[in-house]
Image (cartoon, rainbow, N blue to C red; front, side, top):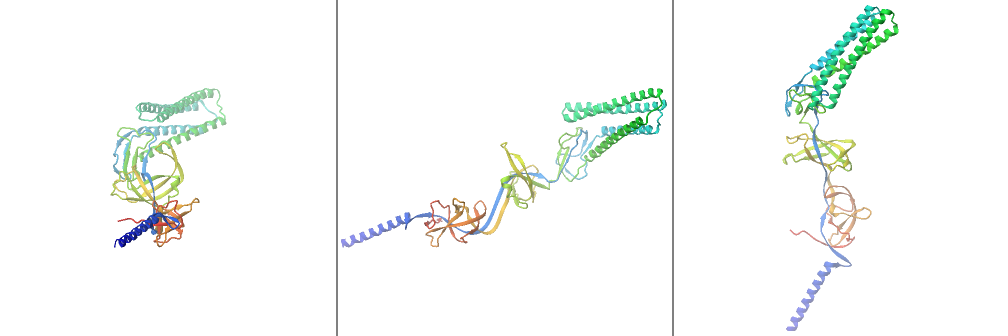
Amino acid sequence: MKKKVFIGISVATLIIILIVVGIVKNSVTAGTGAVFSVKASEITKGDITSYLSANGTVAEIEKSEIFIDIPLKVTKVHVKQNDVVKKGQKLADFDFDAMNLQLEQAKLQLRTQELTLEKLRLIDSTISVTAGQNSLKVAQNSIAAAQRSYDVALKNLNDSTALYAVDAISKSELDKAESSLKDAESSLINAKLSLESQKDSISATSKSNNQSASSKQIDIQSQEVAIENSNLTIKDLDSKIKKYTGAMYSGMDGVASQVNVSDGSFTPSGQPTFVVVNPSKLEVKLNINEYNAKQMKVGQKVEITGDSIPETDKITGKVRSVSPVASKNVTSTGSSETVIEVLVDIDNITPSIKPGITVNCDIKTVEIKNILTVELDMLSSDKDGNNFVFVLSSDKKTMQKKKIEIGTNSDMKAELKSGDLKEGDLVVMIPLSSYKDGSRIKLITDQK
């Protein structure tokens, strides 16, 4: 009985030893190769979607900026910043007294010049002392007109000097006033010289009553040039008065986003007096670096988010244009990069979308539906850049190396363009460089 028990124990022990040896052998080697513990995932059909993220600024598509290039006094402002305005609504009243005075003086000077020309054409080659005296009166009238222009220019310079002292106007505007005074002074000097010339002429005519035809023609041409110059001055003043009168009114419906004047102030230099925008027509301006710009296409869908946009607001848009030219952009670190401007139309503008805010745009650059895909964690590549995967055999005991070609990829998976794979095939995840074609495997499944 003891012998049978001993034999039974020996047999049981041998069986246990063989089982242990088999387990160890199976966990280390099988046949002539190592056994690798692997995880696998199926080849499935799905969609490939890829996004490019970029920060941009919301800007107005429709905007009216009113610039006044000379300092005009504002007598009354009729709107405040952020007021809703209508096209044709008066925004402010400007004081045109000085400009109207200049216009009237220019017209008087023109009339004087026209009378002088008429007289020059009427006189014959024999100039009497009486004719000379009439010319003297004309010259005296010219001096009076030139003196009035000089007085206006001097007053304007004094006003400009006072404004410049309190930083109400720019240095260029002060220089312009000084230049105008110099021109007026030059005209006055010329008028005085003309008067002296007429006096000399009277003296000369007392000695000789003959004037050459060529001298007369020169006088006529000189007067014609003066008349042409006066006409240009009148035309310029008249055009400016009409332009600045029109600037008192809004050119579009919208919101007064900037009001840079107040009652009694002067219109600013270098910035708009008023800015009117249409808050219902906005866009996003993006600067895309040249590497990513090749992915941009008109019509791509865009998801818009931002710090000032509530998470409940789902703002979308579409790429409207991609600039055909590049530009240089200075980054926050001070370096320069080449960028392409991309404009995005906003589909649904909510109260949180305001001009000037910074937003993040996720641009859908790729969208392919219902295709065979491989997970990026399945891929390996050789020294030539060829992609391949390891596919489990039907009994799940070995793996086969298969070359594949991939196409468009997203963050997690790629399009399977070619290769001996089909939907449902099990493919090894995160393959090691030690894996070989035909290697034995042990499939690890997730325990639930």
